[in-house]
Amino acid sequence: MVITRLRVDLASATPEFGLFCQRILPWSGDAPEPPFGAMALWVEPGGRSGVDYHTQEEIILGLSGSGIVHMDGHEDEPFSAGDMLVLPPRHRHVVSNPGSERLAFLDLYWPVHEIPDEEPS
Image (tube, rainbow, N blue to C red; front, side, top):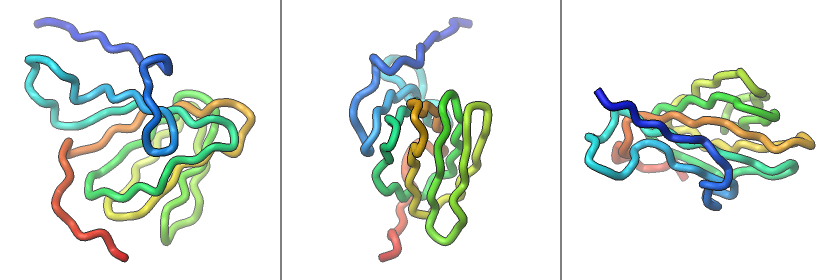
C-alpha cells in the first residue's frame, strides 16, 4: 500500500466561487477516482462565497476562523474551527466570514460528479 500525502495550503489555492479554493480530491494521476471529492477553502474577513447549488451531499468542517452558512429556506448556521455541518443537496447556499480572521474550512462532497437536476428558478 502506498500512502498519498496532500498538504492543505492557501499558497496552492486559486480564486474560485468568490473565495480561495484548493481542490484536493479527486487528484490527477493514475489512482482511481475516489467516491467523494474534497476541497480546502478560505474566505477573507468580510468576504463571502458565490451562491452555490448542487445535487451532491456536502459536509463542511471548520479548520480556523468562523463563518456562517446562509441556506435558502433555513436559518443562518454559524460555525467555527472544529464544527462539522452536513448540508442537504438542492439548496442554494453561501458561506460568509463576518469575523476579523481568515476562515478556513474543508468541504467534502459526494458523489464526485453532479447528478443531473434542474435548479429551481
